[in-house]
Image (tube, rainbow, N blue to C red; front, top):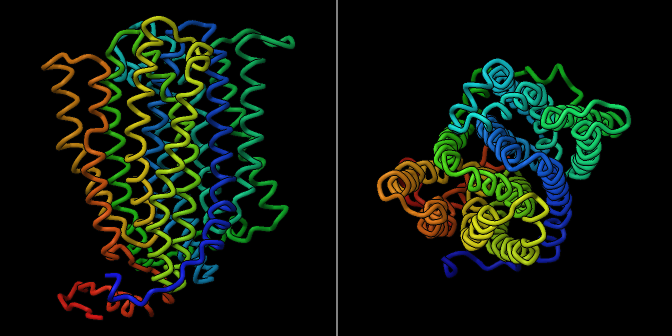
Length: 479
């Protein structure tokens, strides 16, 4: 391929500068959020390992909601970034309106479940009655936060796609500070407030969600961001636009929902282990967030830096950027994993683990540190493909491997062979190396560049001819 396509000097200065501009604020925001979760876990640790485990399982239910609406976030950001590159303001506004509408429907459904059927939810995730009761009291309050979180997430996704990354960072900082403050006051009953325990942690999450949304709206109004404020433009949809939107979103929605269900099935296996293991899993998920915090910045950088160029019709630039993003991501994730391992001892003890639960937590971190190098590379591949218009390839691949490889291995290891817990946990990542190889082949093919904007459509034929890509009609474009 290198001989067929005329070499172009890659602009490393622009590339790295804009990665920093986009990725660093996003990574900082997620790092702050994760740090807030760690502080919450440390506060809850004083209430016992059962409380830590229960709240951790409730967080897995929240992750399932996240999977339910992330398909619309992924599809929405595809349109936001490409229309931003094409300077199509109306397209951005109506894409945001449609994205927000679908996300609110998902958030309302999960809020109804948390508030109306918390016992059913906890019974699905664990068979330990004491943990179930703690989780029920938590869900009955935290369910009110879901709508707030959904609206904030939609606004943040839009702002990042149009390179207004500092506003979500400000909202995230305010949210984390508020969450830590409210949790301290309400969990332990400070400054004259009643001591609410785990219910105080739930209420603190609700109040922090409100603070985040208010900060976002304040800065949107202050900077007069048009796409969020033009409510009448939210609903300027026609049948063709909705069909195109859902065609791009559907593979991502299927991916996120089915992978979310698959992860729920894995978490059910992990949630039926010993109480020590359940507590270790809850703490691990919090520390995993430290690594994902760094990845999230790269995810947004990939979406904007690649999607914007595809939308503007600069497909070769997008292609060259995508290739480099994957390798830079793996290097950064490796650094983040080493940092977590270096400080894991005081962190695990501070978050309430000791003895057997500490041993399990340490083993999980070591296994994950190896798997994350490949896992986050796969995620970066997938986010890059989606931003360029190819929402199906990575989604189909991930779903196929989850249900044909990962789940059978985990269930057989746990229920048939009664393998040690850490081996069962390691098998959760058994598919990652195979998918990475397939993702790399697809990356270098260039077939994932599929613009939705008019500017992108005008130049896609030339790009395909340069890379010898065969079109849908069977014609091969030769260089």
